[in-house]
Image (cartoon, rainbow, N blue to C red; front, side, top):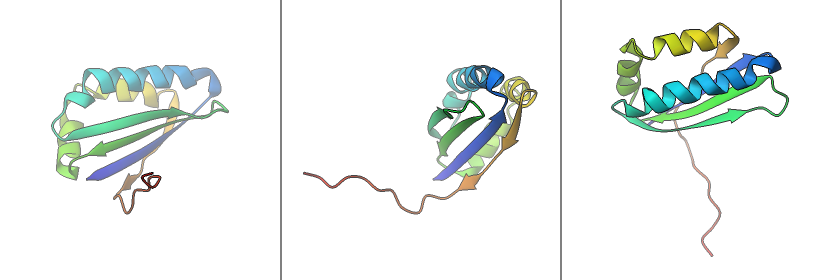
Length: 100
């Protein structure tokens, strides 16, 4: 499992547009790619960031999706109004409340 935590720094006036773009590309294309596990989209309360937490079965599956030209226009649209700060992580530990 590989996790991507990608932060988009954005002018608050464009925050919803970035959310809309990432929602559309994820629903229409990315979520259907081989190896996609899940993603969670977040927006900061100050309007200055949009963060996507995405889980993939493997780095190879993620890279195969990135080679697909279909998501490219969406990502280019997001990057035209936001600065991208990507991050790739391995899950070390997951914490949950104890079972009652």
